[in-house]
Image (cartoon, rainbow, N blue to C red; front, side):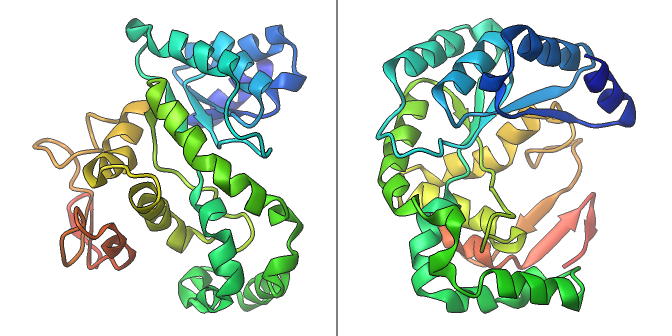
Length: 262
């Protein structure tokens, strides 16, 4: 509780739990309860079944990721617990950020590494950092991080569908910073995977990237939709993203708080 209070006083917006299956239940509850007393959102890793179950018992607001293992689906016990939580409408939505585009796209990027030459990820980095990152991804097929990804990839759609059917509110988010996944590319890639590989309606995917995150972060009065009285935070692209979601790769107009930057 003292650590959460310290973070709250420092001005953080979110408390993140990881490996909560290696904490006592009292410790998990203490973190979540103290964070909520300070009006903070609590996100938690959702890799392992017991991580999820403990997070649900403690009342976390959002889970992240879809598991590190190659298990073909979530266990029934986990799905039943998720359904029990989403059925409690008075608690509001249970949010989940799958962060799966890096896994879906790994084999393509591995086999087509010229994608890594896109200079957009260089912005804001010094030459020595750029050189260091280049060296770290020189052999994409040898990266330990992705060794079991080809076995994990076939499980992702099943788990994604399980979460949707269990009633969670899915959010667009990325695991940018993992090898070969850069912030400049990951968000549109996540939207593209949802629509192209997972059959999500494009408008549903867009809302998962705009409106629903604003609800989770308790800022929907200011951002999240293009509505009177809200900040004019807008992007625009040439073409119909409801037919071609990958048009989001090339943003033509950027407006933030009413000021056009591009």
